[in-house]
Length: 159
Image 1 (cartoon, helix red, strand yellow):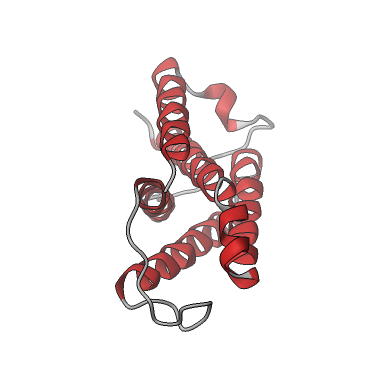
Image 2 (cartoon, one colour):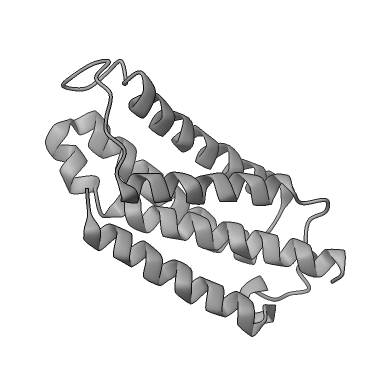
């Protein structure tokens, strides 16, 4: 497979993973607003960031945009890691560790995938006036369907 096609697939994969993480985050916004306005705002912003970045990366895959996406997802991962290891210094129970649940673990794995896929790019995919997702093969579309189903399952299973 040539480098341009690999780059396109990596960007599309990163976009799908960010979109899946945003679905998980969206499903817990209300619950987190119930705990703390700050927590609710964090999840609302994380959801919006990932939900907006995913289609932007597919339609305008430029180095700066991809780096912002990787950095934003890495930041979300770091907040999750802190909340599960030492606790956060803010909120109703400062420095209290959260338990790990399937949806948040899955979202963090997806975010790690975004970071790794963007970091693995040697070059930016050429645009050629088209949306990247239209050029991807059947196997990649099947992966997208499986990712979506797995994400919905994790969300429905809940915390």
